[in-house]
Amino acid sequence: MKKADKGLSEVTSIQTNRHAISASELTLGYDEKVVIDQLDVHIPEGEITVFIGGNGCGKSTLLRSLARLLKPQSGSILLDGEAIHKQSTKEIARQLAILPQGPEAPEGLTVLQLVKQGRFPYQGLFSKWTAMDEEKVQEALRATHLTELKDRPVDSLSGGQRQRAWIAMTLAQDTDIILLDEPTTYLDMTHQIEILDLLFDLNEKEGRTIVMVLHDLNLACRYAHHLIAVQDKGIYAEGKPEDVITCDLVRDVFKMECQVTADPLFGTPLCIPHGKGRCVVREEVERIDPYKALS
Image 1 (cartoon, rainbow, N blue to C red):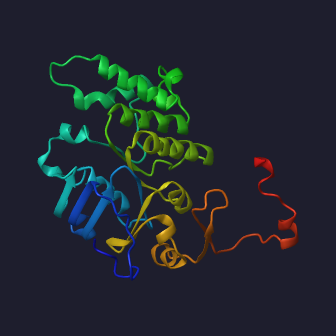
Image 2 (cartoon, one colour; image 1 turned 90 degrees about the vertical axis):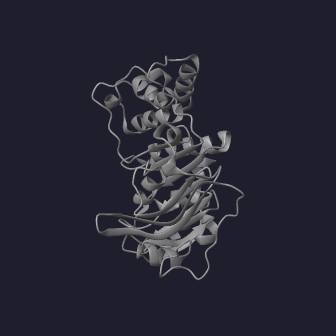
Image 3 (cartoon, helix red, strand yellow; image 1 turned 120 degrees about the horizontal axis):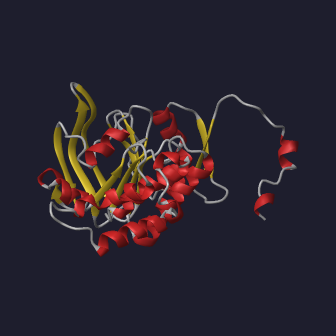
């Protein structure tokens, strides 16, 4: 990997025998602007990997390139050990699904119609809709709890329901790898947890490789097995959240002072940013039982 200039002296990474996606000496950009420079990155198979970093650092650009939506200026990308640029679009779509940020469905398109689009990679010029196609669509609807909403127009759904519909489409695609660019954007807290729990279950129960861009550092720490912090056109650090999330990382990558402690429910790193705000005196804090509602 190319480590960012201000990166940690040591980079921790998860040791795995297989990588779902690998990139070597990858340089990405738009016109003359280089966003990612000579980067090596490996996505562990069967785990949840989350890209984190400040705005404009290249997280989404990197994700798009791994799905062959953005052609590298230089370097190579391997999908399941084979050069991705040598594979056809349908070959890639049978291995990898990507959900971009803020997708929009055509007006009036129903949930069922949208989910059926996920079977496109398996359709030929003269092929018919098969029992397998129907089974995968129904499985996707059940997994996302959308069976009762399948005849509703996508644009009539709530934010969380709409995002579940798009995820159902990627599930119908039946790939081992799912890439998502900020899947919780514009969602309230309840719907954010709903979506991330769904993705967590897909990994835990079905072994899917999940790769996401997330802005919420604490949620990234809760759900990811593997974090990749992007900064200065390279990787600042990567590895298990509990190994890489430090005050130094947050200061360098996000330009913010913070305190890092353990999440009281999950034990994962919890970043508490410094800044202005109300200060409740300790006597009052001690009288509050934060877990009373959970007992």
